[in-house]
Every structure is written in structure tokens, then in C-alpha cells.
Image (cartoon, rainbow, N blue to C red; front, side, top):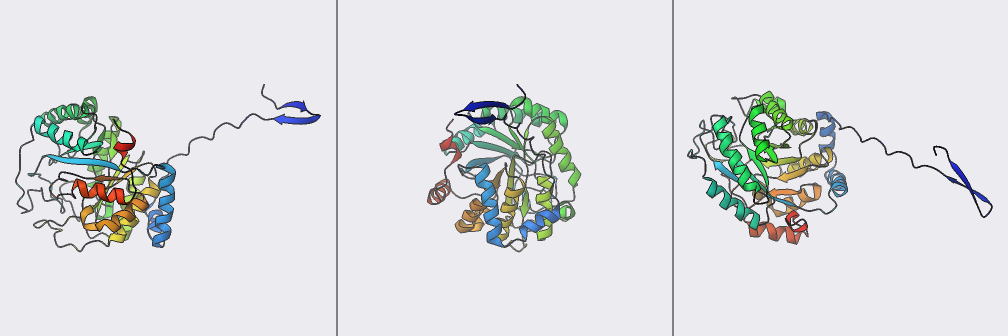
Length: 343
């Protein structure tokens, strides 16, 4: 019956209406840099409050994802990224190494899982891997996946066939950061352009792999350029499932070694803007978390950060000890994803 039905109950007419059909899903919103800048320029507490409301709506359990990152091939990178100690262009003392053996990687992955990590990311200092490199990484992906961990890789630029091969191996996420806003990019990197990064992200998406993509704060960019970075990320279609926010680690020998530290409260603002513009993403406090201190980290969690790299080493910069991280989360009454959803 497609019309209203009228029944008599105790002498009174009762009208029964069919429920309205569900509204169509809202289309993804494309954010402009000016819109994100307006967010960043709100009063600090108002911005954090707004971001927290969005966070609670989409992550009501307020759990923190623990991820571990292992450099499976360190140093010798031909790129000239001004922040990176693994570049051959910078006298940082980082020696190029061969790719780790699968047994070594599996040992690290088991330790990460035992410590509560649910995602294991493997990084290699390549500009763009060759097909033989991809075969080796694909083997690692299969082995780590077999442990029940989500897998992620960051290997540089990919071709479509390489992204497809990693998908076939079971790769869950691929990390390829935009690093900065487009208008700041050529001040920190000269060996590739912004479109190269966007092309790799498209290849990854087309292969059916989830995207992990973020940027770095504290490289000398303006607030307007931070807004530009967040706008670029939020306007990817679809937006990244994971958004790492890095606080520049100033390493001796790199061009950015003498850069003034970013105001820690600015990191909180960017976390908040990321949460508002990408409400379903895991926003990760990544490199440079130690330098922020526990109070700022707590504000970042309040503003929507819900993932951290912890344990072992974050590439070559080190990372807070596992025990310290877990103690902080307990003090903040923040549950860990692996404890809510044990595998």
C-alpha cells in the first residue's frame, strides 16, 4: 500500500505514515585553503572544542591506534628532501644499508604485536623501487599479514603495476606524504614535484589500497601554508584513511637542522583542523612527538589525534619507550585499539 492508512481506535482516527526514505549520503566536501585557514584562526579553545565534538561523533570509544614503523632499508636515498637524514645529499652520517632479511622483519613485527601494535609499517629509503624491490616487499607483506597485523609500506613513488603487485600481496595501506602545501613544496624538495606525489597516490587508490598521507610541520611554512596542506589532503577523493602529522625532527647535516621549532600549540591547531576536515581518518601523531611533551600530546588527543607510532624506532629519529607511551595513555584514560578489538 502506497497511501496513508486510516484506522479507528477507540473512536479516533489514527494515521499511519510510511517512514521517509533515508537521505542520500552526503557527497565528500572539497575544502579550500581559505576555509581551513578560517578554522586555524579560531580561538584556540573553540577550535579544540569543535574538533573534539567531531571526534566523539566518529570515534565514540576514543581509542588510540598503536602503529609501529620499521626501516627495512635505510639510507642512500637519491632524493634531496631538506628534512631527511637518509638523503645522499646531506652529510648526516647515516650509512646506506641493504634491505633487511625477512626473518629480521618478522621478529620486529612479532615484537610490535606483542607490545600492542595493530599496524606495522615498513619503510625503505628509495626514490622509486624497481620491480625486484617490490617482489621482496611483497614477500614481507605476506609474512607480516600472516601475523594478524595490518600492513603499511612507504617505498617512494610507485607505478600502477607495482601498486597492483602490493595489493595482490595483501598490503592494507600505502604511505606517501604530501609533506607541505603546493606553494611551499619546491623550497624543501627539488628532485621531484608535487604532481609526482599525487600520481603515486592515484596509483595506490586505483589498486584498491588504503591511503596514509600527511605532512610535516615546522619547516618554515606559514599558517596559510599549513592550511593549504590540510586542504589538499581533505580534498583528495576520497580523503586518506590515515593522516600522519609530523613535527619536524631537526637532524644535524640536513638543510633544516637550524630551523626554529614550531609553536607546539600550532601542532594542536593542525590536528584539530585535520579532524574537522577528515572526520573518519585516523589522525596520527608521528615523528617529533617526543619533543611536544605530554601536555601537548594530551591536547592533541583531545583535538582528534587517535593514532601514534610507538616502540622500537621511527626511521632514524628514535621514539618514546613503549612503557612511557602506555603509561601516558593510562593516565589519560584512553583505551588502546588492540585491547578493544583483540585479534
